Length: 359
Image (cartoon, rainbow, N blue to C red; front, side, top):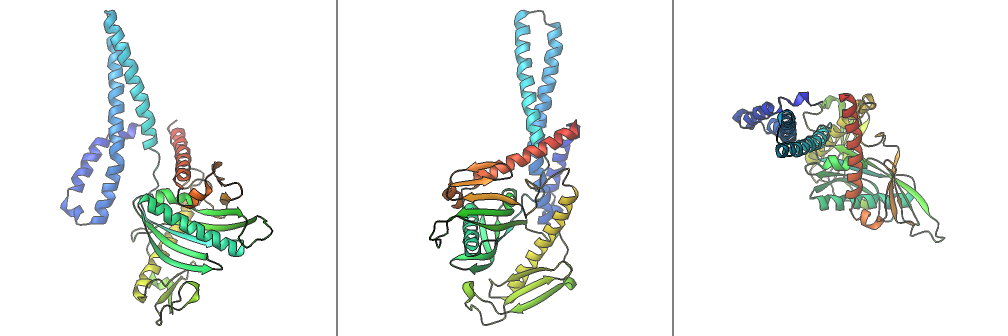
């Protein structure tokens, strides 16, 4: 299954020359693309070099064993043969993991959308908990966040919120959060102590680049209106808020966080591009779902992916049947353990596909 790697070292040398080429350096987007591919391939080349070296040494040991006449020499060759075969086996497993298909969006920033679902004010409070959880997680990981839009609801809850998480690999980790999140707890306003079940939906979209999707402005209607602050208070006396509608798909994006109408328009169009890109990705994923998944589970955002049970102090992810009993720490942003478990499950599924195809 490694025949395609025979020329990987020459490919790396060619990429090194490209990265030093002044013409490529003048186009930073193109340079970053080549550099990203170079960084991904370098550990593969190193592992393949060590794998082939171990195989060749083991082959030489076998040939020498056939002619060995000295008992000490024979023992030394057998010991070295065992060592080289062990190295080759380990490097083979390492290569299989390195060759697992990468999601081309993994390196990107993400746009996160959270919406309160069923459950009234309690759903809004839960949406607010998730909003806080992701911001705290982003801070722990060294990512930065930028709020794009937020509408508050009820007693401190959130009806819906949109924000960006910026940092290398943000999508590779947060993409597993897309879906319906369910909470089971006793609301503060519940005097009888009855447990309520509420939901909130989370969508995680890879930030679209200009090269990813072409937006025809003739397909877009742009409306401007007066901004209002969180909770309904007026924050602007000019028509600076912007609502863009993509007529062919019906997608609507509203932005009002900037005082400048132009900046709000730029942000709204950027988010619209991201939504159109995500729509195209969803179509592609449906077409190849039987061969490869870009997210753990079916990827259907209508499915319940996780339950937060306060009386039992547990969080259960239904896609991998994993439960963690640290609900307060989890909601304080300590979600790395769950994300890593989801990544491992996803990687193992993709590795099985690579192995099946090789056989």
